[in-house]
Length: 228
Image (cartoon, rainbow, N blue to C red; front, side, top):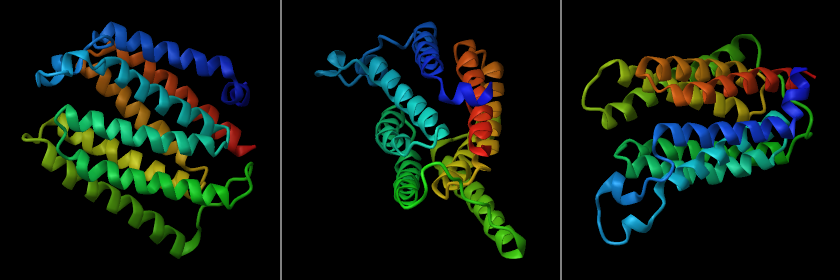
């Protein structure tokens, strides 16, 4: 069943519907750029909400296609990184000028690695002392970089700061494992989505609850598909 979910085009469509519904219930689906930035000029004519939804849909299809081991998902993810980074920066995330270029490089690396590998074959995780050292170093560096960049973006080190630091570090680790085409990425994506779900519940952002439940299911189905 889980493998069928990973391959299902209907489940793709369900994800798009959840994204649209989440945006509508959150009240930003039809927001303009002026409502977000108050720049004036032509900003009232820019459909910022719809552009943000488009970015979310790109991210969703990137995840769905990589779950099916389709390298097109990495190409879509590359476009999604550019769009998401621009949106985050416009929303006031000063750290975006550091975080998204790194994510872009990792995503571009993934495209190259996947092009030079068998389409339906995952790579084995490095083992032994050397493998453990590589994985540990990657995790430590990801958390360190996440802390540094989020310290720039946040003025207060409250629970939101630490939660954002955690989720970005997890995304870096998962993206790096995806670039290496390692199956273990799906455990980290699952953990990432669980933290995002808890964050949405704490903030009372119930429109995002369904979205992250969907992503958790996608992570589990992706792991099942990659095991085959």
